[in-house]
Image (cartoon, rainbow, N blue to C red):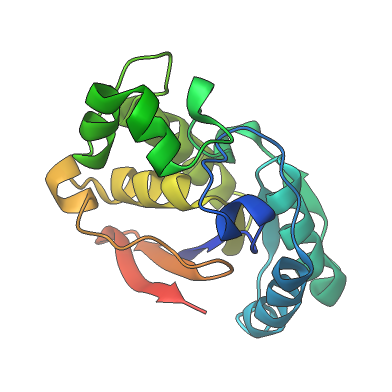
Amino acid sequence: MKRLLVWRHGQTLWNAGGRVQGHADIGLTDLGRRQAERAAQRLAVLGPTAIVSSDLSRAADTAAALATVTGLDVRLDARLRERYYGPWQGLTGDEIGDRWPEEHTRWKARASDIGLDIESLDDLAKRASGGFLDAAVSGEVTVLVTHGGTARQGCGAVLGWPDQVIRTLSGLGNCHWTELRSDSVRGWRLWSHNVG
């Protein structure tokens, strides 16, 4: 049986301030580092055999906390990055709503394609699920260190869920994870969600 533990990074200043991060490389806060250290202790008990992380520092530093506990190496994969938000990166929801009201409304309604060179949800799902499935061959229990939107869309795509179902999945808290399991009979299944 294959297991994927899809782990969201620890808190950043932009998380705390409600700012859209996207591909901006924002580091962990002191609280985020403590969250990663605590969660790493819990994840280590689950017996990870591989760690694959987004190459953005907030995820890579979260992954490093688990590597320290387990002795495993961390492999970086840019496909695990957060959704690309173009001109919105660094802005709050209110600032986005003021400058781009129509696109902001589409974003809040979870439209796949917002425009403004923002990555579509469909493209994010394809990118993320490709990274997830490639990482699954890395070991029996693979920890994927990623971002909130990427976790949701990637998990939904791996499970074969339509977007109407994916949108019902709550977002992961900082340093929380989702577990997916696969066997040769039933394929990938959601095992647990938002554990932390």
